Length: 464
Ligand SMILES: [Zn+2]
Image (tube, rainbow, N blue to C red):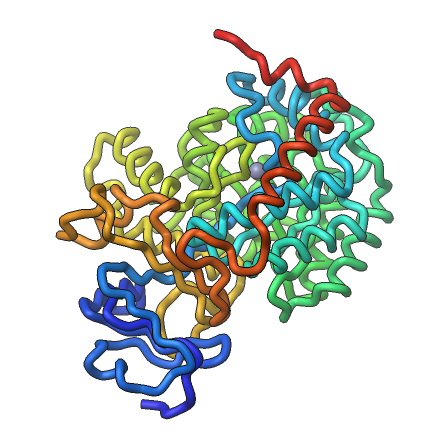
C-alpha cells in the first residue's frame, strides 16, 4: 500500500467499486491523493491513514461518479417545453427557433444551471452537445461554466454548416445555419486549441446530425478530431425514418457510409442510434464505436428502443445520457438507469434483458470510456470522481441489495456529496463553488426574455 499523503479519505460507507471484480465493500473506504484515487478497501485497513480531511460515510453509499454521455446544456432554459410535438415538428417549431434565438449570455446561464443540477445529482462528467450559440467565445464560455461548477467533461461544438437540401425538405429554418463549412471548422479548431485534449473540460467536433449535416463537412470534422486525438459526436439514426431518409438521398444507410469512409471507431460517439438494422449493429460493434443511450428522451419524444443487448454483444461501448432538459427534462442519471432497465424489460418481456449491474456499468465505467477519461471505476490510479448517496431516507431503507436499491429506488436528489478530481464540488445540499440561488434567478429571467423573443411563449400555455 502506498503511503502517499492523502487529501481526502472517505470511511465507513458501502463502496460500490464497479471494478473488474465488481466488488461491493461493506464498511469500505476510498483514499484520495490529489486528483487520483490512492486506495480502495475496508475501513479497518485504510481508516487510520492520515488525511487532510476524513469524511464519515456511515449510512451512505459510495459510487464512482456518474457520466452523462449526451446532454445539451443550452436547452436547460427550455425545460418542460415542446411537450407532445412529434419528431421533425419538435425540431422545426420548437428546438430550432429556440436554438436560433438564444443569446450568448443566455447560453451560458443555461449551461451553468444544467451543470449545477448535474453536480447535485452525482454527475461528475458530462458531454455537452452544444449547438445553441456556437461562436468561439460562447462555446468556450460554456466550457468555463461547466468547469466553474467543478465538473469534468466535453463540449462537443455543434457543427451545422450551411443548410443542406435534405434539411431544407424537412422544414429546418435557414436562420439556424449561420456559418459556412470553412467557418465551422475554423471555429471548432480555435475552441480545441483553447481547450486541448488533456484538460478538465475539452472541446470535440460535434456535427449536429448524420442525416442533415453536409457529408464533406462531417468528414472534415472527424479528420479534425483525429488530428487532435479527441473523440467526435453526432446525433444518429433517430427518429425512425432517419436511416431510410438518408438512404433515399444518398443510396446508402448512414452506418455503411461512415464505415466506407473509415469514420467509425472508438473515437466515434453516436447519440441514440435507435433505428439500426443487423448490418448497422455489426458495423458499430465491429469498429468498437460508442453509443449514447438516452432512455428518457427516447420515450419522451419518442424515438424508439435502442438495441442495447445486440450492440453490446457486437462490441460497441454504450453509455447513458440525459439528452438535456428539453428532451429528458432532468439531469438525473439515476432516473436514466432505472428507465433503461424498465424500457428493455418491457419491450422484450424478458426479465433478463438487462440488469441493474449493467445499468451501473453503463453510467460509470462505460460512460468514462465514451468520454475518454480515466475515471468510471473506484480503483487506485483512476481519477477521483465520486458520488456519495445518503441512504438515511425512508425510500432507501432497509438496505438489502445495494445495486438494486441504487438503481430502482435512489434518485439524483439523494446524492449527498459529489467529488470531481478530488475536489468536493457539492456537499450536503450546497454546490461549493457557485451561488445556486443566483443561478436559478438568472435562469428564470433569461427564459422569460428568450421565449418572448423566440415567439415560443405559446408553448408555455399548451392545455390538454
Ligand atoms: Zn440530443
